[in-house]
Length: 226
Image (cartoon, rainbow, N blue to C red; front, side, top):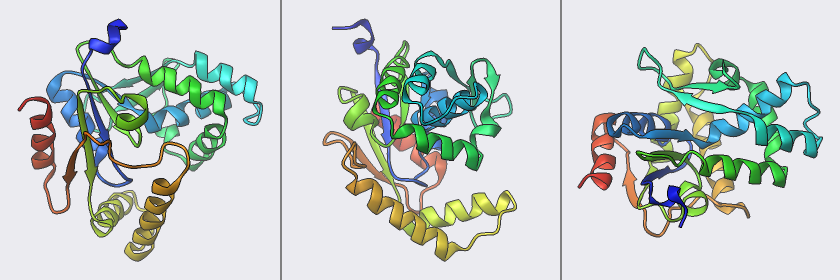
């Protein structure tokens, strides 16, 4: 048994817009545990590769980049979104751009990059504990985690949350379009061949439709601290 396997892990999986990011951050803060935002890792490696001027179709070079890039998550002093440090540089804002998203998509199709990022995710498992936020944390990355949660909400509720976020950023969107996109993404995620989005058999299922953030946090904490 490796030393890390004795470190407790809480996995929080779920579809886009279920509130995983916000809930994971708040729960990690309350527990005093480390936080892993698995979705940010692909964007961070894509960003690092871009900074090095790498050709994203060069599997060998990008894999080497994935293996050597240092990624750290840091709680923001103002209580806002967690900051992502890539090789010591705060790249949080750059990682939210469409360019970073396109780079992440390009490198995610390289099997050796995916494997490098699996190893990187496993390395986040350090004392006193880890809250891991993603799509396949409880099923693929940390199947032995003692605490697992699957967060979801109706597509209509998730579309409303996303609509509010985008409107606050001054972007022009329609609720109907967002709901269609979320439903299409759900179908894609659930039917993909590699690590499909589904609750782990031993996960606690929490439907957050109509629930306030504090209530959801309390429910998740009760899984770890009954």
